[in-house]
Image (cartoon, rainbow, N blue to C red; front, top):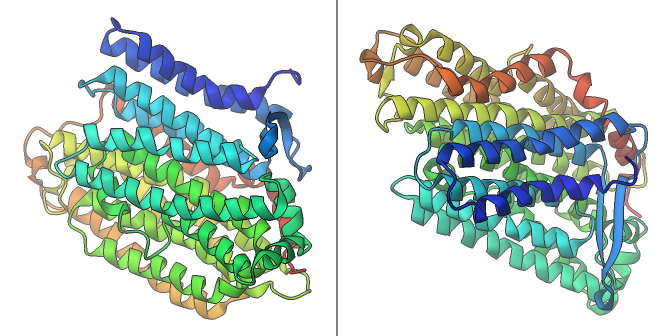
Length: 513
């Protein structure tokens, strides 16, 4: 088993499925769906093998695959897995089949849709596992291609504009990041994340860049920051997000919010923080305010929406901004040569939990909105429904669990991550945690408004007619996600034990050279 390239299999198996669908000319739509679902489940199967052999006590990369690739540029094909990567690989393995099942009744160009989805899955896995910037960036950019076509070809009336806006924003940010890494390569001769992190930790990287030009350390930091900020997105680089999420087909919306948005936060943890600790500490006070804007303004923007899909989109901006709030609070408080306290450990643990838990709840909510839209002939307004609970009690119950998980109700998975983030931020920047509480209040208001207007009161709008409850394949995306919301809400250690030693090791090194 140790001789098998498990990480390469993890990345490329979905692409093999996409290639198979590309050459399968005569298969029925059902055949295409089954092939796509089978290959998407390969991630969960291989993740189970990795999980069985994974050693959480080791903070270094495991299952490492490293081979020379482009020797003239000192580029290696380098894959590796730690607790952070494993959590996001598991999330991808859960969200992708759920998104395909949510799109099961899609009839138009099923084979192409399925192939694009598998290509998107493989690219996302590559981002979470690659350890050399050259092919990490290839995976990062390749994820845009299937996402663009999924939005444009199967999206709503404004899909074309939303797809182009999504790509232009992301490619624009990536161009700055590419220039930053080009400067890093000129200064160091390597693009390996581990080697760059070592150079960043002892200050060598900053001195090498400063020797090139006094402003280069800040320029490189800004370039990488912009590329990652657009992807998360960090306010005010978020304006592509609401139209993209709202216009995308439901399965693509589930993947965009459940997996792709996590790529940006992953980049902050894997790349920006280890490589540019000093510039990040200097910029942290400003970045902390931007994260607070995402938390508070994202929640208030969601509260003003009448389109349910846009409401959930702004909710994603709000919830991911909690992760950035924690990271920037730690960065602003860890600039001296003093050890990091327990507050930083709590904030880091909460961030990793939030990444996973938000992926579950947000994907489930987009599926629920898609079901409302499908049953109402395309309507998804806040005032288009009423009394859905009476017409579809099982659907209402499952959607209610996802809503209350997103709200952070104790006993469900959303509570644990948010609690740890606030516990950590209160210990590092109490004023920032106090301001962020406004976002918590607004989140409760818009999610409870969603719950009350759509599911309670007299039956009205679409629910007044023949509004059926869940049936057949519609259960399949929701049941595993809802089950995990309960399991991880009551037993969060099932997830935290995978990364606790890693988080403790990170916290022990969060000092500047």
